[in-house]
Image (cartoon, rainbow, N blue to C red):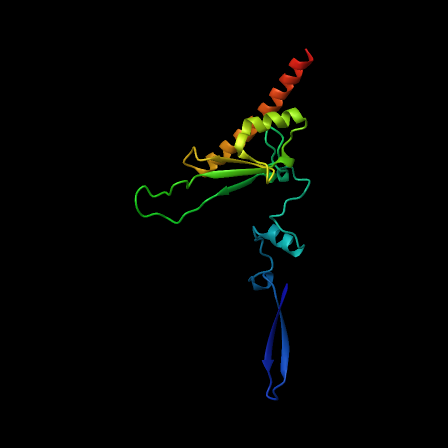
Length: 175
């Protein structure tokens, strides 16, 4: 039941507060009704001060996805540009679907100096030494989602390739 307060003024000018009690059950015509609201669980959660949108930490769906190379997706930063609607053909702006991925060097799973050296040789000028981060750009597809997937795939291939080449180089040096 919820409380509703209303204020009314008496003739003497003093306000009096009247408290009214109401509930959804009181509004039904018969108390023997078997109707059960589909929102009962939601209302129960609200009464317990819980949110239906907050996932429990033990919930496996709340885990952060990880790329094949071992980078967590929450450390990747994506950037894109959004334009207003264009009324003339071709109805899209240049680089409308371009997506940029940035990731800091500290989040890359490169352990040895050889892996890092090979990584720097692969990415070349895409690595900004001043900011100590990698910046990849994709405008290959006519969809931002596909370009984002393409960037994650490229990052996976770069990291896995650098690790594989470092392992092969170390193996060749020991033989």
